[in-house]
Image 1 (cartoon, helix red, strand yellow):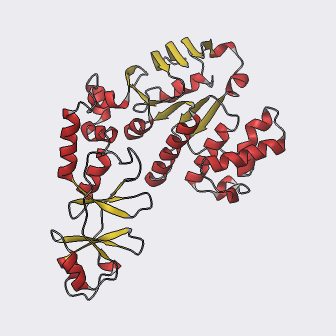
Image 2: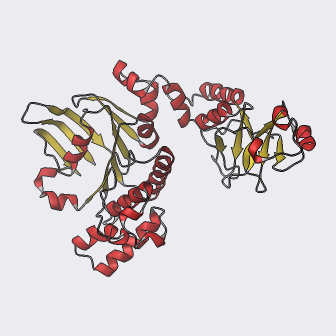
Image 3: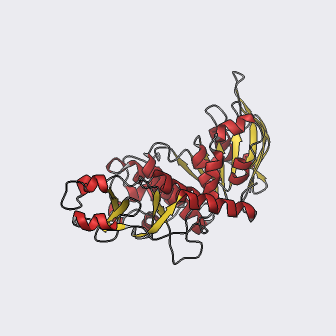
Length: 377
């Protein structure tokens, strides 16, 4: 457990970065520090591994003041991941990951073997092991950074805006990868971000900090969305917090109904016969959705071709064979609202179409969740 007890950090020029912080980080959970620039997120994080020492107050790690041991010894039990990964450019991927075990006395051969295992754990192919950081994409570099932080199997992992420098698609993949790793490893993770969506997605608990380093609210994501303590938190969380809260409600109650579909390359007359309410989703040979057709698309053509399709919006991923396999109400509603036909396409784990959902059915499921007391409050 990590505990901040009345911790303040004041710099010589009088600037207060962290102001009387009291906070308990639970073992085996992800705690996210979030807030605007200048709120003391990174300073708070760095006080855990003594990259910064507090001006007053105490930071405890497993009940022991972090200042009671030398910084180097303390950091050997704490993984650290930063923006842009911070890899050694002159070392291969494998040797970057093996760095900490070698420094702590592990035989180089054993350290490299462990590094190779960790590359697989974070989802990187073995073929990348002999490359240098400059030869990797930004997302791959961040995965190497995570693997390096895990190499000594530390109980605590500090992550300072690790995904902020990559594009949104890669960032989403990295977030999912972190959640997968955490479900397997159960580390105590302190994660810094300025993105409230990222905080809500990743955090078991979220600490919202004000400019000046004061703690505004520390709560679960559901409680934060449902009951912000004041106007600052409400403004930071966003006016659409009700929509965000749908991400914590399963879409198990949303019916996935049959959807009209036609095959890519089908003749136009056959496609017209397959329209329902004026639309049909077009699927490829693997039953993956590739777009939509309506009467306008089919007008004056002999067959359904890829260049004529209407874009399909987002998809709603479900696993019909798994208990609790449905996604969230948020993803179901987004799929329905972004679809040109008003029907969101549900796909299985292989990406194949299994049916469709409507916004009306999502709203009905939400009403049922409220009636059953499952809506966060």
